[in-house]
Image 1 (tube, one colour):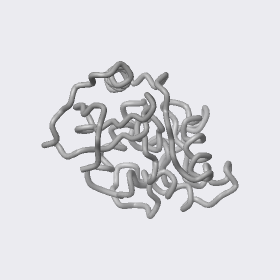
Image 2 (image 1 turned 135 degrees about the vertical axis):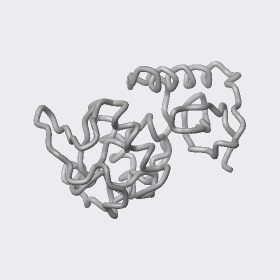
Image 3 (image 1 turned 30 degrees about the horizontal axis):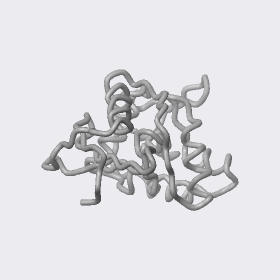
Image 4 (image 1 turned 180 degrees about the vertical axis):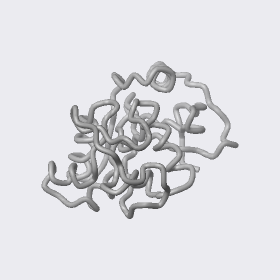
Length: 182
């Protein structure tokens, strides 16, 4: 299990391990349920805990804690684009790729390597033919997390919202319907 963590907290998605560097969130890991919770002792970690607890309670996504994202220049561009997708809306891998002048698989790969799930909302990116993947998986607990996050943010199953025009997803409820990861 990676570490060390500034805190390990329970969430509706399971245990989350949160790592800080220079008082900024640098990694959020989904941990096994048997992982022990670890209270935040330093002020920056307590602030992260409060903001994540507020998100899980209310859906509020106005995170004000500092984020430290390490990745390639392309990954940085993708992660910045993810943060610009409005709460309750989704984009397809292809739409994001067109916006960035790239390919859908490259966008999916950058989403897969997102070190800050939830705070950098890779869950808001879906396949053109369904929900796509999450954290490099197209089924299992990872996809259940993505479905929960989308529903929590007001993007109901089966509905893809782009701007003011809703579009139906073909198979939002099915698992394993895409080769893309998010």
